Image 1 (tube, rainbow, N blue to C red):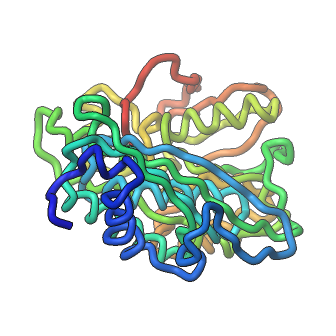
Image 2: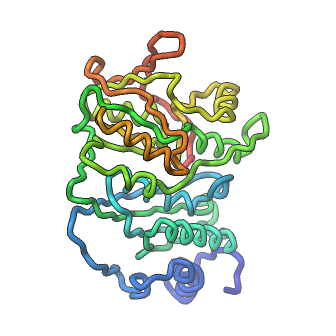
Length: 334
């Protein structure tokens, strides 16, 4: 392509659009299904239940330690499928680009998406591009839809939780949220934080069994918000042990300095697993056997005594209510 940035003509449906799709998107996303070049991609069906999820990504900055908006868009979608018990198979992607956006950055983002999708064993089979006038966007936004297949015996739902079930987290909290803050240059200190952005399907697939009640990935709003959602959906409560929650010293030190709580900070490479008491030791051992779960910990249990509430047993012996946040925490972290 002879330009170095996105033009309005790239979104007009003519030659420039064709060249953009061929020379950047098809170049990196190439696979037999995409090569059909149909208005709707056709792919073989398989027995089982299908899981579908859609997510939009507006993270700022677009490139950050540990990832970029392209990697994040694939990981976030794969993880939504994985915690639903699905094997991720197909992905669609839609790009809204601002006039003037550098083509070199677009290609970096698309190449990152392609690399992450290949590593996850998922094919990007359809997509769309639109261009908005300069000043009408903020560089690039990406929307993805993921499709995965759920084995017949798997049915994860908050409705399956029971008092006494165990709460397991796959690792320390808040690395993504604070990394994004630091990458914006808005912190009073320098930091070497790296986002935990990662695809979790290989970590979670070995766990699948009827003894797993449900799973979630604690993204926006962090662990505390995710557990509040589960408590409201199930009509049950949670009691967590503060001392059992794995911590990243760099995150905790910076969070204390900023007056933030890592329990509410976003994660992009962590999973919460609710398992039966009998299955919990096996789940914990399997998580710790994977590089992404080395610091997995059993941090609490489901309780019927405080329906709709999440309580934290503090190191001081008191109980603290972890409420659902009412206002804005960290905007545009994913």
